[in-house]
Every structure is written in structure tokens, then in C-alpha cells.
Image (cartoon, rainbow, N blue to C red; front, side, top):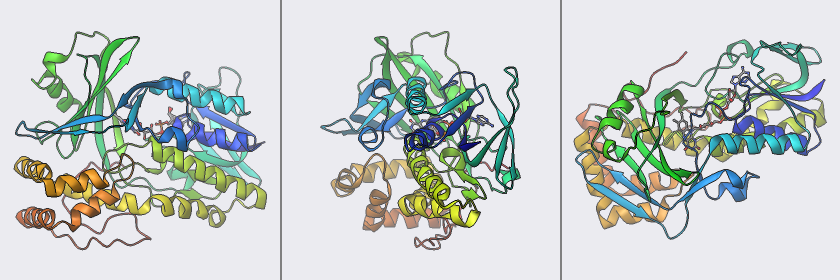
Length: 419
Ligand SMILES: Cc1cc2nc3c(=O)[nH]c(=O)nc-3n(C[C@H](O)[C@H](O)[C@H](O)COP(=O)(O)OP(=O)(O)OC[C@H]3O[C@@H](n4cnc5c(N)ncnc54)[C@H](O)[C@@H]3O)c2cc1C
């Protein structure tokens, strides 16, 4: 019997396996695809500091980013430039393969082409039943499961776990593209309703390329097709017959309970992503590390009860809950803005008074500080109240309760409900 079964071979699952195997635990990782890192859904933008915070494969980096240009619906733009690399673009297949290699190097077993269909508890452990048995695979038992299935929630219900309360839609393509020195981000309800679109440049084999995608409250694929045909993008896109659309729901709120008897849930499977941008790799790695620590404590104590494992939720909430609450609140508000209001927000950000708040407080991974700094600014508050009053919505209070990750705000539907 393994100490830990990890279900899902994405960044979160592979990093949890690495942490546990490095600490001398026996770990099996199950990935439903036959190849790690495929198919690719993700843009792969990661804060530069992630590489010093976690043990990550450096050779997956394809570009460094220090400049970004934000476009308003009325065609204006704001440029942000840094004198240092703020983020990098990783090639997700290489990144994930690097994580898998380092997990295997320290002793984790990797089962590819194994889709786990059921997890059944028994008094001494938990058994994973795999649907692919062409190599004669059999049910495999462990003392504990780490669920890292990404935005796939078919195992949650049978384990007594809930689902993320809200999702946004996403679609992305990779295309050959004119050489570009900065990330471009586009706002507006004609481009990406309730969210934003992006053009992220990188090179592969010396060929300039871009990941072009968007988050949207609806019809992400249709909006992406329009964006690709638009004058913002089309003139710079080079013909690329391999351009394939990837669609995916992005959870923007954590599930209520990220633990159960013999089970811990991490990364997108727990709905733990940055609600502002949908970026989830950093939080996935962080929750992987925290879950590995709790799993180790549980094995040392011989206690796999939900009560004992609840310390994992306390740990990630201490690190992330206030960030996530503030981010959810911001997204609820921002996703309601009309194009005229987004233009007005751009105008405010262009002013020295608000611009310096962003320069002083914005960081790639942590958004609470800049949101609160904006909230304290009289002009921004005036704008906020005017736009809330305009649509008859009521901001109950920016004070949020620790026990409830859902925000104390009631605005009309912003994302699609799944499950
Ligand atoms: C369009 C788009 C762009 C994005 N861009 C960024 C970005 O630039 N930066 C960023 O930080 N985040 C980004 N994200 C989010 C990021 O991709 C996720 O947060 C991240 O991949 C989550 O990692 P994970 O390990 O939790 O899940 P995943 O990466 O989804 O991995 C889960 C794995 O589990 C496997 N699996 C699922 N069910 C089973 C099962 N039953 N049995 C076996 N295996 C199973 C899946 O095949 C998958 O390989 C983006 C997301 C999208 C949709």
C-alpha cells in the first residue's frame, strides 16, 4: 500500500508528489493522459519569484516579461513597464514534464494513461480504481489521497466534497505571431464580456508565437474567434494551420471543504486560483506544499480523519483566504462594468493619483494590497458607488467573514454555474 495516491498529473499533483517523495513517503501519481502536460490549456505566465519560492524546472522558460499594455474598449491604452522581469512564460508541457521528472527522481511512481473513476475508502486506507487496464493494472491502495484533478470534478461528490460555486469560461489558441515585446490585455464587453482577453508573446525554436485567449462570462470560443478576426489581432497573426482552440472552465471560488476523511484537495480541483485573473499555477504549488505537510503530519500521527486533515484548510486559508475574498469581491464588481465605465476606470488609472497606487502596490501574485489601496482612494470609491447605484446593486460591506470564502456581496450573475 502506498502512503499517498495523487490523482492528477498537473503542476499541483506533481509538486505534491515531489514534496512527499522527497520526504521519504511512497507516492503514486495517476494521470489520465498518456503524456504529461498534454493537452495544453494554459498560457503559462508565472511570477519570476515562483522559481525561487518553489523547486521548478528552469529550462521550461520561453520568455521573460516586464512590459504590459492594457487596452480600453474605446481604443486607448496604458503601458506598464518594469526595470526587471516580473513574470516568465513557461512552456507548460516542458514545465509539467520537468515537475514529473523531479518527482520520479526522488522516488514517486507515475502511472500514465490511468483515469481514476472511483475512490473507495476502507478501514485501513483508500483504493483508486482506474478505467484503463491495458497493462493489467489493478486497483491500487493508499493511506491518503491528494485530489489534484484540475477543473474536473467527477470524483468530488462521492467523497462528500462540494464544487466551486462559480466559474468563468475560457478559450485559447497558440498562433505564429508578429514579434512582440510586451503582453497585451484587452478589456470590453465586445471583446471578453465580464473579463479580459490577452496576447502573450513567446518564441519556440526561434519562431515568434503568441498565446491568444480570453476569459468570458459566456461563449468564450465565439468571442475568441471574433477577437482573432479583429483589427487588434488579425493583421499580426501569421497563417498557422495547427491553431487549435482549447476551451475550459476556470473556477473562481474555492470549494467549501478541501478535506475529507483520507482526502485532501489541491489546486484547481479545490477551486483555489486567483479570482482576478484565473491564474492558478502558483496557488496550486502552494496548496501542494501545504497538503504534503499535512499528509506527513497525518501519517506521523496515524490519524486520517477529516478533523485532523482540516488543518490543511486552515493552513491555505491563512495564506490565501483574504487574497481570494478580496479578489472575488473585485471580480464581482469589475465584471459588471459597462464599456463606458471601463473607459472611465482607464481614465482614472491614467491619472497620477491613482496610477501611483498601482505602481506602489501591484504585484504579480498578490492583488489584495492594490485592491484595498484603490478602495481607500476617494476618486475610486466615488466611481464604485456611482456604478453600483447605476445598476441598483448593493455592496453590503467590504468586511468579509473568515469562515466564508464567498464574498458578502450580491451582484447579478457573473459566471456560469456548473454542478
Ligand atoms: C486558457 C487558460 C490560461 C491559463 N493561463 C494561466 C497562466 O498564464 N498562469 C497561471 O498561473 N495559470 C493559468 N491558468 C490556470 C492554470 O492552467 C491552472 O490553474 C493549473 O493548470 C492548475 O493546475 P492543477 O495541477 O491544479 O490542474 P491541471 O493542470 O488541470 O492538472 C490536472 C490533471 O489531472 C488530470 N486528471 C483529471 N481527472 C483525472 C482522473 N480522474 N484520473 C487521472 N487524472 C486526472 C488531468 O488530465 C490533468 O492533467 C490558465 C487556465 C486556462 C484555462
